Structures are given as C-alpha cells and as structure tokens.
Image (tube, rainbow, N blue to C red; front, top):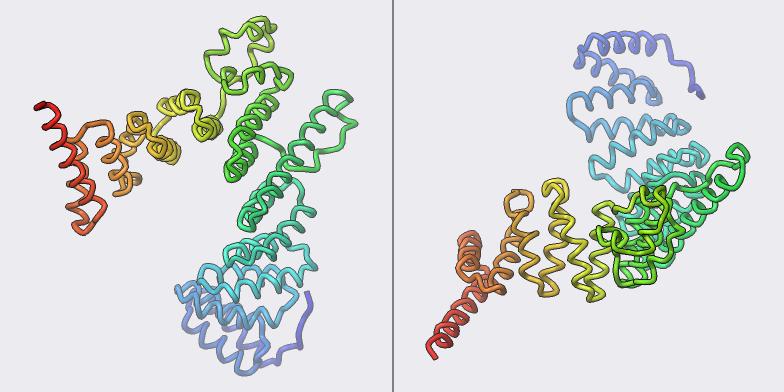
Length: 404
C-alpha cells in the first residue's frame, strides 16, 4: 500500500489518543480528536475513515458516506474501500455516487474487481442503461464463464433490450457445451477431459430457457424444448420415440406405463427419472394451454394440487389466472380458492378473480358475497359495482326463464 507524507509529531500524538478513545468506545472524545487531526492534516486517511466508522455506528450513514468519500480519494488505489463505499451508497439510494465509486474500484483493481463490475452492471440495468449493462455482463462472462448469476443477469438485460433470440441462443450454446462435455466423459477417460468451461445446465437453466420461449409465444417449440432437454437431464435422451406423439406428454405421468415401447425398455431404463420439477411441469402446462391443448394442460396443472400452497403460491396464482383467462372457470377456482386462505395472496385482485369465476359457473350467492366484501373495502370500485349489477340482471333473467 502506498503511503502519504509522514504525519507530524503532534498529529501522531493526537491520532494515538483518538485511537485509544475509539477502542474504549469513548466515541465523542474520539470524534473530537479525529476532527482536530483533519484540521491539522487534511490528508489523514485513518482519521477520515474512522470518523466515518463512528457515524456509521451511530446510525448516521449519510455523514459516514461523506467522510468515507473523502478518505477514498486519499487512497485511490484501495479498490476494496471504494467498493465498500459504493455498497453503502446503494443502501442510501445515492445511485450516481454508487456508480462513481464502483467505477473507481474497477479502475483501481485494473478491471479485476469482478464483484464491483457485477454490482455496477446491476445498477446500469436498474437505471435502464441496458447497453452498458450488457457490455459489463458480457465481459464478466468471458472472465467468469462458469458463473451462473452472470448468465442470468445477462439474459435479463437481453430481454429488456428485446434481444430474446440472443438470450435463447446463449442458453442453447451452454446446453450444447454441456452435451459435448458429457459425451466426452462417456467416450474417453475422465482424467483426459478438460473441465467444463461453461455454466452447468440444469433444471434452473431449462426453466429460464422455457420462459424465454414463452416471451416469444413459441408454444409448440417450447413444448418440444422442455421434453427434449428434460430427457437429457434425466439421462434418457435416446428415448426419442416419445416425440411420435408431440401433443401428448405421456412420458411424464402414469400414462407412460400403457406405452408399448416403454414396456419393452430394460429395467435399468425404467428406473430412470421421468418426473418433472413442478415449475417445469407448470411451464409445460402453460405452453399446452396457450396452444389450446386444454386437456393436456390440465393434466400438468393438477399435479400442483399435491404441492404445499404456501411454498408454491406463485404457481397456484399463475395457474389460476391462466385458467380464468381462457374461460376454464371451474378449474381456475380449484387453484384460486386455495390461495384465499393465505394473507400474502388474499388480495382484492384475487377475490375479484374468484368472484368472477363463481359468477361464471353460476354460483351467484358466493359471487355476491365476494363482491359485497370487496365493495365494503372499496366503495368507489366501479368494476365491482358493475359486476354486482350484472349479477342482478342474470338472476332476473333466470327467474323469467324458469317461469316460462
């Protein structure tokens, strides 16, 4: 570490006294002494740094930030200190200062402070500076090719830039690297195979890739991709004959036992995994639903009812709202009503969806109860008033129809 000019004897004495006061937690005395030091020596790094530390201990983070900024400029080569100040700046909401400090840290580290490069790229993305964010994550990917979070963040930026195809290509290339690596391990002595220079492709990567196909509304392709990659992950990629029925996902449920080709498999193949992680299954079901293969979609969705609602609440909400959107109200209720027992999900929007589904399946009394509760919380809600009025009309029409 580079050193500044030698402090005077007076400054040395004051610094010793200040440090002793700080160690014994006599913060006011320490603060007064450090302030006296910086008046005598305005380039005294330890004094500014410890003043900032004292203010931090007292909860005055803005003053801490101010003193640390002065200290950082006195030690411009200390990239770890710049990064620490950047992280504090983020917590304080001082984003411009945070970007400045991260840039200083990166420069001081000769572009080797990958943590600062990553965090700065996150800020670029949050500030909608997508080009800079993408460039930063791309550089990080070259330096850290096996770092999963870099790939995920880069994919998010690509989506914001409407470069979904680039995000898909990135994940497909990672998959191909993994396929080649596994094949090399199978074909040669493992000790002769160099390490995988890519992210390991697992279920999380498949989930992200399938979501990307969903953003392109590529329902059929998405189904095919999920099926093919799931087989590869389950070490049964040779079972390509499942694709003879592209609209039926029978390999992933009990229907596979009725398949003649499956029945002829050796026991070793039958013992392999055929189940899907629930998030992947719901994604596949969503693709089927959007492709108007409702029966196949429902087969996937009903697996969710065996899962803990609190742990998979987001999936319950997704499935329920998707089914409501396509008019499968009776099925939607099975998912939405379960969510209503949990405060985190029991919002006015959820109750509104449940009320609509109840109305559509003809359960007018429960629908009225739901709408009335909503109106009590929000008397000015026009949508609820209209829904209640429509319910009255429906009941009147029903009475006339029965009277004929």
